[in-house]
Image (tube, rainbow, N blue to C red; front, top):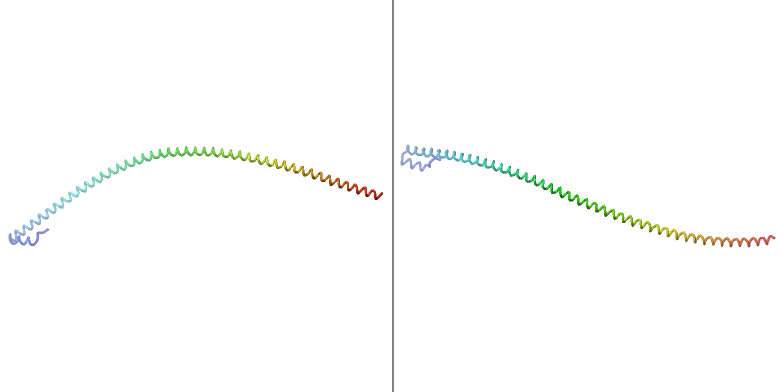
Length: 175
């Protein structure tokens, strides 16, 4: 950055034009040199910072890969452990279901036997009642048949008497 005009004007008046111009040129050269040096130092610092950042990022990536690998191992172990536990639980559930199935089958068989027994008893009772009704009906039919037979004989006998009387009367008439 060039020296200000006021500063330059004061130098020109006291030192003269040649010396003031030379001094301003020297200040500008020093300023340019310092700027170039500062720029170079900044670039070097940035390059070191960038290298350190890259190195730390690389270390962080390596550490993260290691941790992810360890986590993958832990997850695999957990999967195996959980698979074994689920296998045990599945076996227990299957065993309990088989026991419940057997118990249910046993109870159903008992209920079937009880129903068969009751149906057999009901069949026997129905057969007994039908037999009683058949016997009663047979007795009543026999009684009815007996009464009808008696009535037929009475009617037939009465009819024979009437026919006999008619014949006697006719016989007497025709004789």
